[in-house]
Amino acid sequence: MKNGQRIFGFFLFGFALLLAYWKLATVELFYRFAIGIGFGFFLTRASIGFAGGVNRISREGNASLAKALLVLFVLSAFFTSFLTYNSVESYSLNINPINLGLIVGGLFFGFGMALSSCCATGSLTDLAGGFSRAGVTIFFFGMGVFLGFYTQTTASWIRESWVSTATGELGRGGVFLPDLFVYDGLKGYAGAIILTALFSGVLIYIAAKYEKKLDMYTPAKKAKSEKFLSYETFFVKPWSMFWSSVGISLLFIALLEVSAKGWSATTPFGVWFAKILMLFGVSAEWIAEYTNKPVALFSRSLLEYGVSLQNFGIILGTIIALLLAGSFKNKFTSGLKITPKAFFIYAFGGFIMGIGTRLSNGCNVGALFTPISEFSLSGWFYLVFVVIGGFSGNWFLKRYISKTCSF
Image 1 (cartoon, rainbow, N blue to C red):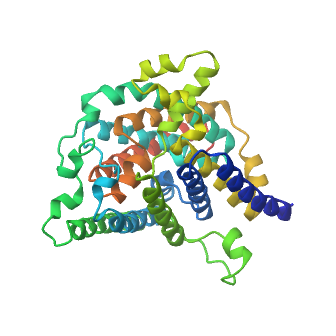
Image 2: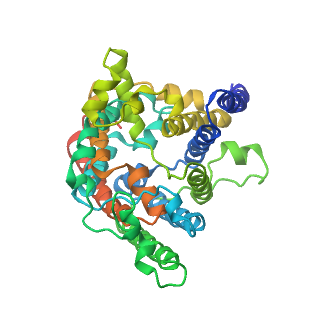
Image 3: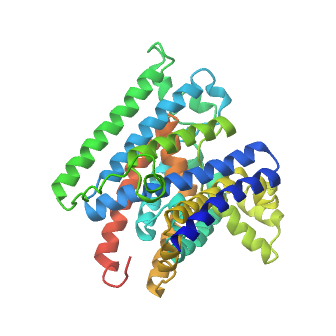
């Protein structure tokens, strides 16, 4: 059975790329789909998830993923500097506003990801191994995003930044760290990279101290090492978080180069929910008026929407990773069951996460990883409040839900 899954995994990978190259309208769309597959594959091979960084340290006292993510932020920022050094105006960077929306959205999102045990990209990778939980989360996440569109596009406390720098003013407002170090001899990038590394280093130290204080986490024994060039090493045995982080950083840079934009994930969830409404006769024109968004966002095919294609690629990349490991069937079937109580918890978690993304202009990808990687100070503010929200959500689960629901 495992060999059959592995053969099908290779076939699916090749077939998907050939079909996408043939059917997608532009080479950019093809690349974005392929990069999405890469994201899904790398996230799955090392079990990396942005929500897990908070949930694991809160529930288990395990800070390993949190520390790996902070290293990922520094790597991605370092790589980004090479692209934007001489042409920052050529890229649509996620220099997000710092405002009340960022704070409240971070708290909402953190609380919701604790309830659903995943974030936006996490729900996509979880479809293959936790289908029922991820499916419920995605549907209600999309509802929350859809309902929050209008507020996001009209409310001044979401759109306007309390503080901005010159580069931030070119977009939505916000602080671009290199603007703070313009006299460092490297257009501010040396100071920005050092500050990013300093922020990450301080948080890694705090996470390690917290892990030691709780004394809950026992590192797993190292498995017997495999030959470096072997099928088991590449496709079956879990990868180290460091090497997956390097892979994700390189894919992020590839995406930035191809699309002139960083990694984002959440707007398509709202568009998918709108497409469901359209199946029941709601017009794209009415949806556009309600959401204060362009009609084309809802009327065009999902195969013409780059971010949506990336998300589809993440789902497919996860499936391929599990097929190549020979574990897809067991993981998928084990994730089909769901209790009524769990359904409502995941639904609420997904919904409040969706609302939170509209307030903070993104999720753990669009408001955290990408802004930090692109030297936006907003990402560090978001990190603080998403962690507070995540710890609060996990406290709520432990205090009021754990006795009645299995997670």
